[in-house]
Every structure is written in structure tokens, then in C-alpha cells.
Image 1 (tube, rainbow, N blue to C red):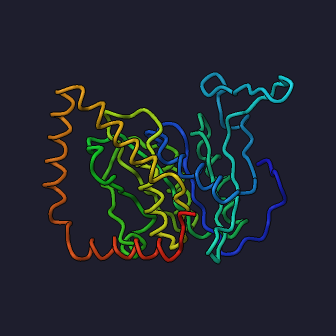
Image 2 (image 1 turned 60 degrees about the vertical axis):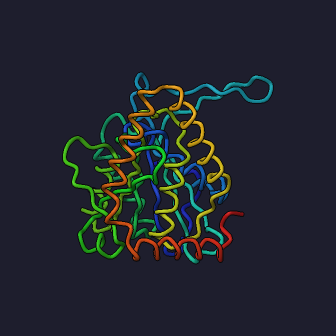
Image 3 (image 1 turned 90 degrees about the vertical axis):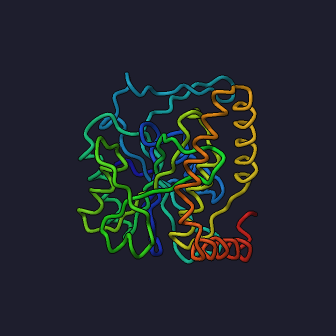
Amino acid sequence: MIELEGLPELVDPVLIAAFEGWNDAGEASSGVIAHLENAWEAQPLAALDPEDYYDFQVTRPIVELGDGLTRSIIWPTTRLSYARPPGSERDVVLLRGIEPNMRWRSFCDEIVGLAHELGIELSVMLGALLNDSPHTRPVPIIGAASDEGLAREINLELSRYEGPTGIVGVLQHALGQAGLKSVSLWASVPHYVAQPPNPKATLALLRRVEDLLDIPMPVGELEEEARAWEHGVDELASQDSEVAEYVKELEERKDAADLPEASGDAIAAEFERYLRRRNGNTDS
């Protein structure tokens, strides 16, 4: 671990984490962390030594030009920052990185150790996957929790996925094994429009995190960007009759599956979210 600053004393901190790569369709999950870093003016906290976890022939460093054409090297790694969100009485630690190429267990051990050192007891892992969800409907969010009791407590729709996993799943497991509560939230990104960015999926994840943590989340321009993204995909789909027909089929399938969920509880939950956001004035 390379410490960028001395470790501060944080108040009831929670960790929100996302990784670029396999876990990040449409850059939806890493987009949440980038958005919060900017909105909250997060302060650098620590970074992992890239020599330990990255194959630089697979995940290459990047050259950047500064003033006077001076060159600097940005190494692929995982960085942590922290902030006190306006209107919140607790601190948030933000983790954004690239899925490591090797030594995943040691990688997770470092993060778990830092979580213990900072007093973090709850972690929210973010991911995004390609799915056959239509771009015109609300973004489905599924998840997993470190235990079933926590899942029931936060009313989380659990994933039944079995198969290969990424660093999000491995780190969540490591946190749970260490006795820390951990939740993962996954946004479904339409596979026919997989190219990043996907602000609609980023916004959906951000709002689900807000509901989970009861911390006001700044939306900024994400709502406008999400509408523009959906409109742009609408135009592209309208230019190809086969794509348009496929989207219509996905819409019908999605609407039929979601019909039982259009309950009074769902409407009430959405209204509560609206009131919380209006009273908190989080768009500023």
C-alpha cells in the first residue's frame, strides 16, 4: 500500500467501490465513482502499488502531456479517496480502480486491511453487466449481500448468478469473510448499445446507492445526459428496422415481467425517493 496522505480519522465511514474492465459494462459503475469524486471534491487517501497486481503489457500505463509538453506516466492501479457529503453525518471512502491482472487474494487482503484500519463496517460494490434489457425502460438493478439478513434489511433483489466472477465478486466475498457487511449492486446495460458511457445506468446505480445508504447523492447533469443518451439510442434504432423490432420485443417482454411489480409499495417507494431528493436539494 502506498499512502498518499496520512490516514485520517473518519466518522462512521462507508466504502463505495467500482472497477473498470470486466465488471463495468458501459463504464456505468466506474462512472458513479468518478461522478462522486468530482461532485464531493474527494481528497486522495491511498493507492495500491501497481507493481504487485498489474501486468503492464495487458494494462498499459498512459502518457500524459502537461504544461510545456512535459510528460508524465499514469500507472494503472486502484486509488482511494474520501469525502464528507453535504447533508450527511458520515464520511464516504471512494475506491476506483482497474481490475487487477494477478494476485487477487493479496489485492483483496490489502483492501480489507485498510477497511479495518479506517473503521469501515459497510461496503457497497458497484458493477454493470450486459443484458437483454431495453434501453427505453428503467435500468434493472440486482445485487448480492454478505448475508441473507442484510439483503432482507435493505430489500435487495438478489442475483441467482452462478459462473465466472470478477474482482467485485471476489472482493465482496473477502469483505464478508472478514466480518464486514458488504453489498454489491449491478446495473443491466443493453447489450446492443454496449459502448461507453451509459449515463442512464450510472444514474440508476447512483440512486440505488442513495436509497441504500440514505446519503444525499448529487445528480448534477446526469439526468439530462441520461435523457440525451436514450434519445440518441432511439434515433439509431429507428434507422434499422431489425433493431427497432428487436427493441420492441424486449420492451414487451420486460413489461410483461414487470407487471406484477407495479404495486402500491413500488409507487410509494418512488414517491419517497422524490420527496427526499426535493427536500435535500441534491441536484445542486
